[in-house]
Amino acid sequence: MAEKKETATYASLRAEVLKGKFRPIYVLSGEEPFYIDQLSELIVNQALSEDERDFNLSVYYGNDADVREVIGSCKQFPAFAERRVVVLREAQLVAKRPGHRDDLDLFAHYAAQPLASTVLVICHKGATLKSKPLFDALKEHGTGVAMTSSKPRTDRDLRAVVAGYATSVGCSIDAKSVSMLTDFIGNDLARLFGEMDKLKILVGDSGAITPELIERNVGISKDYNNFELEDAIRTRNAEKAYRIVAYYERNPKQNPVQVTVSTLFSFFSGVLIVQTHKERSEEALMKAVGTTSSWRIKKMAEAGRTYSKVAVVRIIHYLRECDVKSKGIGSRQDAYALLRELIYKILHA
Figure 1 (cartoon, rainbow, N blue to C red):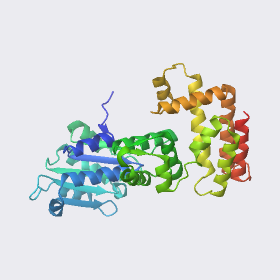
Figure 2 (tube, rainbow, N blue to C red):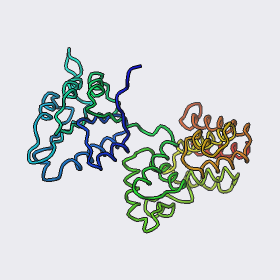
Figure 3 (cartoon, helix red, strand yellow):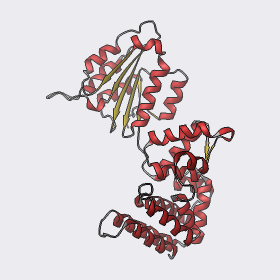
Figure 4 (cartoon, rainbow, N blue to C red):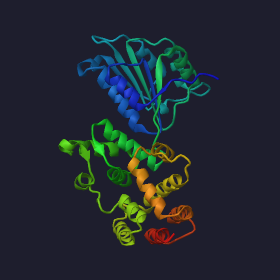
């Protein structure tokens, strides 16, 4: 089997750069621009002081970049500094010349023998960069590394990313706070992490990001959110559940039905896994559900005792049905009327 090109994560490359370890070539590509922007900016800031950047930093943009010129810049020696940094931003816009292969393939020749004092950063947003000659050269000569920046695919993935970011900046965050932020902001990582950076300044000695802190400084209600709705349904607290839905209906922009349905679908899918998984240890269940929170597993186990397996399967069907109808497929009913109907069906499943 052919050896794969070296890949790395944002966290591993960030740790390397902060220690002053630099690769000759970085290929940063994928759907999520946040990690690409953050890592490319970090490389520049760590590799060069502000005084060194005037003569040793070259930035090119794909819509008007000539790859040969970029490579020529990479072959220049640094001036009054240890290294030189060359950044190609928006590489996905590099023109493909009629009758020629993609110009990005030309980097393969440079990757075979890059200048040791140059750090080349290629930023390709929107999709993974596909250049077999370049990646073959990186693999053969060991002169660079590729990072794929992917968007979180599920609510579970997004929550794990948020919890991980809180840890990386020295804060703790509970499951309710994670849910409040992700439900309100969605998967816009730049905005999510920006809000968390602001909260980090305000946490005080405890270092804890709490629902109360979020409510005061981000503008999200700690009592009326999907986490609390999930909790009301788990305990079959009908009064609380309908009160939250009524709040959602009064504040539709902050509480779209589709997000609520997706959150509940993720929860009950986890409940079914906890109910049916052969391995009963907490660690095995956390892995099967895709969470790092033992507390989350305990809540799903509680729901599994409240709702039978048959009921949970039925609830998942109700959630799928509501999701389709809320998008106007096969129904013209108001989305919040659909949500109230859904809550009734779940509570009586």
